[in-house]
Length: 398
Image 1 (cartoon, one colour):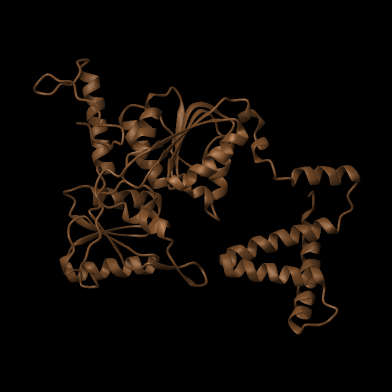
Image 2 (image 1 turned 90 degrees about the vertical axis):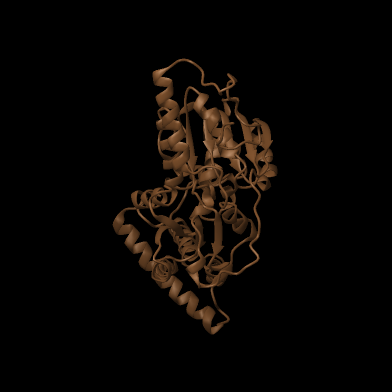
């Protein structure tokens, strides 16, 4: 808005005084209370209930910007420009350069461990240029390592970092259902609308298909939907583990929803069993997360058990044999809430992965080494060239 720092301070003092006076009248139920303040009070209460401090901060910022705008005089042209900028009814028009590209959107949808991302990445490997973007840096690092091991130049980016002004052949966006997330959904929306890729591969849950079809229709993009089935069965254990961890098996992962609980569980398991325990959660430094995941994945490291947050539900390739939930509720900043069923299913689906990142990278390095030493196709003892498994596939080759 072109406001100087000294003006900003003056506006904030004025806004603060207006808030205090208005809320005092609302609290005392004074008849002459400011209608604007009464409305803002309801908005802030709703924001606190739904999103906690983050929601309140967002609404206060909006109210403060409105206060500044109301104190300035706008010409008719200024008003029309502001009105046009605030018109968010036609998101497909936000990226005119992208609309000039005839894109094809390929949706890879299905449950966890169904080979969705594998097939999208195979197309990326064949392309002349492209990027992979995931929800977590650790997941992006796994893919980056895999591609580099195959001799394919790659960049390590999350969805928020996708370049929108760069033309490319293929872009793979993982966990597309995050488009509905309150905090980060904007990044997936921006990427789907704005990335200048001839082929846009979206991997995630089937419930996103109607929304993507609708967006694609508004943008004039072609849509192809590939459905996948889970490659390994997923069974519910009949026995409750409780807090007696002596019977934990190699490959067990206990999921908790707070950092304090994760560290407490790690200590308790180590004390009870003497086993080494790896931990993975979102606020760990990226290098530490990658190291802990690698220790758990490597079969001879001695780290047989993992304690992790719900971050593992975001597509990380971990050698998990069994998922154990320490709780099915989490603290969202101001109260405990139940974990949504789709999120629980996504976390549970991490059990029984066909191949961990450690195995995939090892195979990639071996493939690169073979390609550097011989041009002869690999064959089976019977002289038959190996083929990839059928299209609902995995990371394995037959």
